Amino acid sequence: MMLFTETFSEFYSKVKESLADGTFAKLTFAKTIGNTQLMNIYIRPIVEAEDLQLELKFKFQQEEIVEFHTIDAAFDRLLSFINNPFSSVILFTTEFDLVYKLNKKKTVSITEQPPTFGNASPILLEYLDNKK
Image: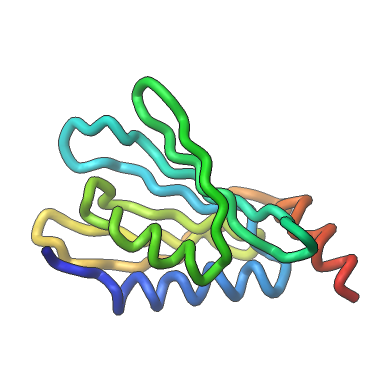
């Protein structure tokens, strides 16, 4: 089993930066390899006991499962889904969209694109505002 720890870690550091600087809009796992029960994973910030955490929503063909993790624990939880079954992860921020993509040879590319979203996560902004 090939692990994408290094490249995903590099990508995830940008996720953490966008959470810290208030530009994070959302994070989505998409483009599954083959026909899978798990269709997408949607990640958004939540505040739990005054701590910023991440809600992971696993969207299956028949159901949704929601989990809550610390920002660091979410990395380990999400890493195992790279190439299994997802070939693409997109970080949406107000400054840029960052696309983590695997090609057929399992080579990773990380590319920046113009931002899709003009606004960051309201939950995140409120959390950061309360931290001041």
